[in-house]
Image 1 (tube, rainbow, N blue to C red):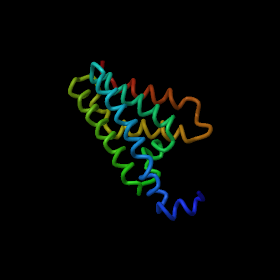
Image 2: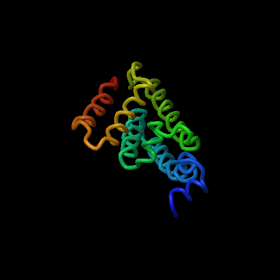
Image 3: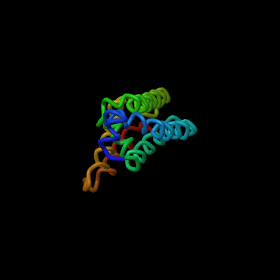
Image 4: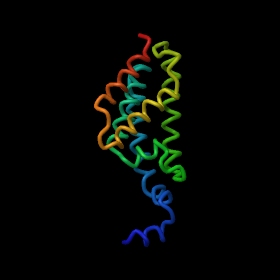
Length: 144
């Protein structure tokens, strides 16, 4: 099928993305949620979530594009990612309540860390130390 025929049947690029990617992304994000929530402590849950999100951005270009909001009109995909963002906020809140995460570390910090990882995974030759900087940022956020 030609690109023109495909777009004629589906509509826009975002419509095509919404028709295909959310189900796959949703499954991956749900698996990440379950894996993160199965961890024994607030710190372990948040660390599992961050590591899992970074792994997903590295292995799944479509999900990475969604997290980086490259297709803002792909509303179904954005909604799936927003649910993961809300989970990240909940995990941060739990770690704050447990006293293991610095109050200075916020959902904005989490999104910045994930943005750095997503941006680096898109770059054909990212700075060699990007993952080390991300890991250090997370390590510095813990109080104990």
